[in-house]
Image 1 (tube, rainbow, N blue to C red):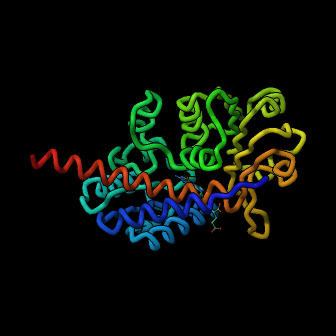
Image 2 (cartoon, rainbow, N blue to C red):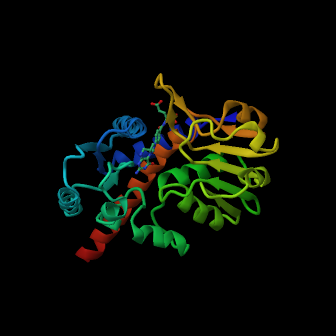
Image 3 (cartoon, rainbow, N blue to C red):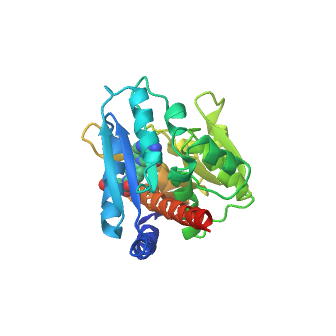
Length: 281
Ligand SMILES: Nc1nc(=O)c2c([nH]1)NC[C@@H]1CN(c3ccc(C(=O)N[C@@H](CCC(=O)O)C(=O)O)cc3)C=[N+]21
């Protein structure tokens, strides 16, 4: 059975719209260079912003800018009280460091939760801002009443915006977590053991029917494109058919990811209001 993200996304959208009607929010998206998946995400963000009454600006820079220049731009935005949240699109062109640039973002404006400060809070089970895609995966599972506690969750991929934080969040939900990657020996053994399998490898149709059991729940977090520009997930359609439950691509996790990003923006806004109150007291 395929599961979709539209219903939850629409519910979150209504929440954001209500909040945005009384709280002005402004997000800036830094996009360096060209990438089809990033472009799709940015388009989705702008549309969501438009529909909810949030200001969203794309700052499109070319790979010709120096990292130093981009650091200055981020520092400038950190100090601009008009800006609520800053997000840095992946992938970065060669010569740019995500580790360096992400950590220039003020943790209180880090709408994706990718600064070391916020990732550290996640690891220590503290409250804070969490990366949007892992959040979307948890929201997707919960919306479909799929239990997590005690389950064997296998994650394919270990990126800092997805696999790695998802492992921490799943652990916090009392799952038993396995992360697989390019050096994993006997991958099929790992994927077959999973109660919940999350694919975040960035390779079209990577998960095939022979890799999974029939009773598994598969979450497809992959966004890939074929030669005709059609969107493909990381999980082969036949594997989705075999699985008990599988999330759709398009129409699945991606839709909720956009919504979770705006929930994060609300979280930042609330923190900024709270801090402002403390200052003036
Ligand atoms: N720092 C950073 N964080 C990211 O999370 C990140 C990124 N960079 N770079 C690019 C990738 C890609 N990505 C998408 C998220 C949602 C949709 C999305 O909304 N997809 C819709 C399709 C919408 C349509 O068809 O127009 C869907 O899955 O149904 C797409 C792509 C996030 N990424």
